[in-house]
Image (tube, rainbow, N blue to C red; front, side, top):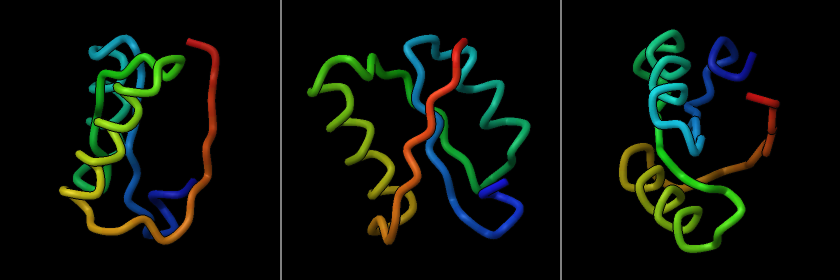
Length: 67
């Protein structure tokens, strides 16, 4: 898992509660974001929030999972 390897992660989901539950399990190296990833504006806002919280993105692993 990315967090176990020291990464900081953003969990983006249209279901804010689901994103929060996952981020809570992962601890302070994760942030939950409500975002409809089929729309550009919410994704851009999620990226901006993540950068503000954790700093610049140094790599990415875009993973999706059925909810």
